Image (cartoon, rainbow, N blue to C red):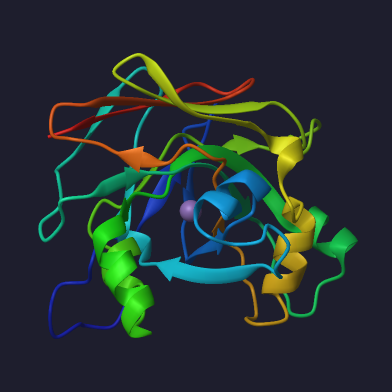
Length: 232
Ligand code: MN
């Protein structure tokens, strides 16, 4: 590699279940309001077109199975919210993908948390400002290990839940998504040229709420190892 004038930032990657090799991350896209009940709890009708925002790749906090990740309570908020989500990772890209092509582009999936400074998001919405400070802060994207789609493909049904200190807060089913994973990717590919290494957070079911320092979060999707986080 050519000399650099400052040290290169570390490459971001995810652990892969059953493999020593890692998945390199390019971009982190997120879809908003993809479960009707959550859409309604956030003031939507539950039927709008998908919309997207991004987190920086280095906001990822990759947590190994059986390990409790530590998320420092972020500054400038009194209302840090959890959003448990299915995260899909792309092994192929392109633009204007068909739904079939989008389905074929998925390399793997994982449990993730779209952590949100809800008070900053509410201020941004009110002022018509961007969501970056609400959504893209450091460590705002805890993600468990990636499961290759291999033979089974991306799960399209199954329970998705988040518990805080042992109490279930969010509960839903992957089949409740308004836009399926391939539909969301296909739509996203009309807005951006997608590339291998891109991730998509696919939206959260109802029941989002605040966490405090010391809380223990466990995100689960049927068939996957739990994602465990402690708020420090
Ligand atoms: Mn979300």
